[in-house]
Image 1: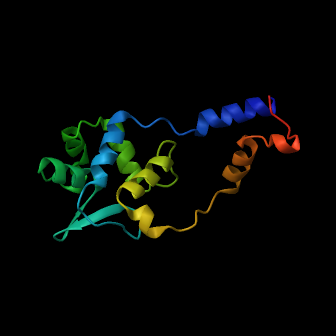
Image 2: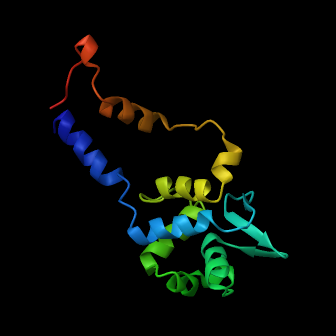
Image 3: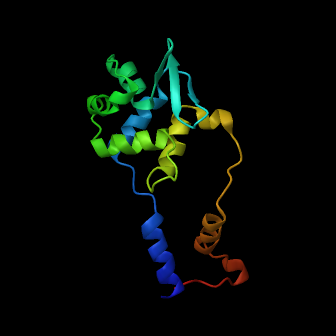
Length: 152
Protein backbone atom coordinates (compact mmCIF):
# COMPACT_ATOMS: atom_id res chain seq x y z
CA UNK A 1 0.00 0.00 0.00
CA UNK A 2 1.40 3.36 -1.02
CA UNK A 3 1.42 6.35 1.27
CA UNK A 4 -1.34 8.02 -0.77
CA UNK A 5 -3.53 4.90 -0.51
CA UNK A 6 -2.92 4.75 3.24
CA UNK A 7 -3.94 8.40 3.65
CA UNK A 8 -7.03 7.87 1.48
CA UNK A 9 -8.07 4.86 3.56
CA UNK A 10 -7.46 6.76 6.80
CA UNK A 11 -9.64 9.63 5.56
CA UNK A 12 -12.52 7.30 4.61
CA UNK A 13 -12.45 5.65 8.03
CA UNK A 14 -12.14 8.75 10.15
CA UNK A 15 -13.56 11.59 8.08
CA UNK A 16 -16.48 13.44 9.53
CA UNK A 17 -19.64 12.80 7.52
CA UNK A 18 -21.49 15.83 6.20
CA UNK A 19 -24.00 17.30 8.61
CA UNK A 20 -27.56 17.03 7.32
CA UNK A 21 -29.66 20.12 6.54
CA UNK A 22 -31.97 19.14 9.45
CA UNK A 23 -29.04 19.23 11.90
CA UNK A 24 -27.97 22.60 10.48
CA UNK A 25 -31.52 23.92 11.08
CA UNK A 26 -31.45 22.47 14.60
CA UNK A 27 -28.15 24.21 15.37
CA UNK A 28 -29.58 27.54 14.15
CA UNK A 29 -32.60 27.03 16.43
CA UNK A 30 -30.34 26.13 19.34
CA UNK A 31 -28.34 29.36 19.00
CA UNK A 32 -31.53 31.34 19.60
CA UNK A 33 -32.70 29.55 22.75
CA UNK A 34 -32.69 31.80 25.83
CA UNK A 35 -31.26 29.19 28.21
CA UNK A 36 -27.95 29.37 30.03
CA UNK A 37 -26.22 26.24 28.74
CA UNK A 38 -23.31 24.67 30.58
CA UNK A 39 -21.16 21.58 30.74
CA UNK A 40 -21.69 19.19 33.60
CA UNK A 41 -18.60 17.60 35.22
CA UNK A 42 -19.10 14.50 33.05
CA UNK A 43 -19.07 16.68 29.90
CA UNK A 44 -22.80 16.63 29.10
CA UNK A 45 -24.30 19.83 27.72
CA UNK A 46 -27.32 20.81 29.81
CA UNK A 47 -29.31 23.83 30.93
CA UNK A 48 -31.10 24.21 34.23
CA UNK A 49 -34.70 25.31 33.88
CA UNK A 50 -36.44 25.94 37.17
CA UNK A 51 -34.56 23.09 38.84
CA UNK A 52 -34.99 20.68 35.92
CA UNK A 53 -32.14 19.65 33.64
CA UNK A 54 -32.85 19.92 29.91
CA UNK A 55 -30.74 18.60 27.05
CA UNK A 56 -30.14 20.46 23.80
CA UNK A 57 -32.97 18.71 21.95
CA UNK A 58 -35.59 19.01 24.69
CA UNK A 59 -34.52 22.61 25.28
CA UNK A 60 -34.90 23.54 21.61
CA UNK A 61 -38.34 21.91 21.45
CA UNK A 62 -39.47 23.58 24.66
CA UNK A 63 -38.46 27.01 23.40
CA UNK A 64 -39.63 26.75 19.79
CA UNK A 65 -42.68 24.51 20.08
CA UNK A 66 -43.71 25.17 23.69
CA UNK A 67 -43.78 21.42 24.40
CA UNK A 68 -41.99 19.91 27.40
CA UNK A 69 -40.24 16.55 27.27
CA UNK A 70 -37.99 14.86 29.81
CA UNK A 71 -34.32 14.40 28.90
CA UNK A 72 -34.91 10.70 28.28
CA UNK A 73 -37.65 11.46 25.77
CA UNK A 74 -35.33 13.05 23.23
CA UNK A 75 -36.59 10.80 20.39
CA UNK A 76 -40.12 12.19 20.57
CA UNK A 77 -38.77 15.70 21.10
CA UNK A 78 -36.55 15.38 18.03
CA UNK A 79 -39.53 14.24 15.98
CA UNK A 80 -41.25 17.55 16.74
CA UNK A 81 -38.26 19.31 15.16
CA UNK A 82 -38.26 17.04 12.11
CA UNK A 83 -35.05 15.24 13.04
CA UNK A 84 -34.65 11.57 12.15
CA UNK A 85 -33.72 9.04 14.82
CA UNK A 86 -30.19 8.88 13.39
CA UNK A 87 -29.78 12.66 13.38
CA UNK A 88 -31.12 12.95 16.92
CA UNK A 89 -28.84 10.14 18.05
CA UNK A 90 -25.78 11.94 16.67
CA UNK A 91 -26.82 15.15 18.42
CA UNK A 92 -27.36 13.39 21.75
CA UNK A 93 -24.09 11.48 21.44
CA UNK A 94 -22.18 14.68 20.64
CA UNK A 95 -23.91 16.62 23.43
CA UNK A 96 -23.27 13.87 25.97
CA UNK A 97 -19.58 13.57 24.98
CA UNK A 98 -19.57 9.79 24.72
CA UNK A 99 -16.05 8.35 24.81
CA UNK A 100 -14.48 7.34 22.56
CA UNK A 101 -16.00 9.80 20.15
CA UNK A 102 -17.58 8.23 17.10
CA UNK A 103 -16.95 9.59 13.62
CA UNK A 104 -19.49 12.32 13.04
CA UNK A 105 -19.61 13.61 16.60
CA UNK A 106 -16.32 15.48 17.06
CA UNK A 107 -17.15 18.38 14.73
CA UNK A 108 -20.81 18.26 15.76
CA UNK A 109 -19.84 18.58 19.43
CA UNK A 110 -17.83 21.71 18.69
CA UNK A 111 -20.77 23.13 16.74
CA UNK A 112 -23.06 22.36 19.72
CA UNK A 113 -20.62 24.11 22.07
CA UNK A 114 -20.60 27.12 19.75
CA UNK A 115 -24.41 27.13 19.35
CA UNK A 116 -24.92 27.01 23.13
CA UNK A 117 -22.21 29.66 23.59
CA UNK A 118 -20.18 27.30 25.78
CA UNK A 119 -17.30 27.11 23.29
CA UNK A 120 -17.04 30.88 23.28
CA UNK A 121 -16.98 31.12 27.09
CA UNK A 122 -14.48 28.32 27.73
CA UNK A 123 -11.95 29.19 24.97
CA UNK A 124 -9.42 26.63 26.23
CA UNK A 125 -6.51 25.74 23.98
CA UNK A 126 -7.27 22.53 22.13
CA UNK A 127 -5.16 19.51 23.03
CA UNK A 128 -4.60 17.62 19.82
CA UNK A 129 -3.93 13.91 19.58
CA UNK A 130 -0.38 13.30 18.22
CA UNK A 131 -1.69 10.94 15.53
CA UNK A 132 -4.22 13.54 14.35
CA UNK A 133 -1.52 16.21 14.34
CA UNK A 134 0.81 13.99 12.27
CA UNK A 135 -1.96 13.19 9.79
CA UNK A 136 -2.82 16.88 9.56
CA UNK A 137 0.81 17.69 8.72
CA UNK A 138 0.78 15.04 6.01
CA UNK A 139 -2.42 16.43 4.51
CA UNK A 140 -1.49 20.10 4.81
CA UNK A 141 -1.26 22.05 1.59
CA UNK A 142 2.28 21.83 0.17
CA UNK A 143 4.52 24.85 0.59
CA UNK A 144 5.43 25.59 -3.02
CA UNK A 145 7.79 28.39 -2.02
CA UNK A 146 10.26 25.82 -0.63
CA UNK A 147 9.84 23.14 -3.28
CA UNK A 148 7.92 20.78 -0.99
CA UNK A 149 7.23 17.24 -2.07
CA UNK A 150 3.70 16.62 -3.37
CA UNK A 151 2.12 13.23 -2.60
CA UNK A 152 0.50 11.45 -5.52
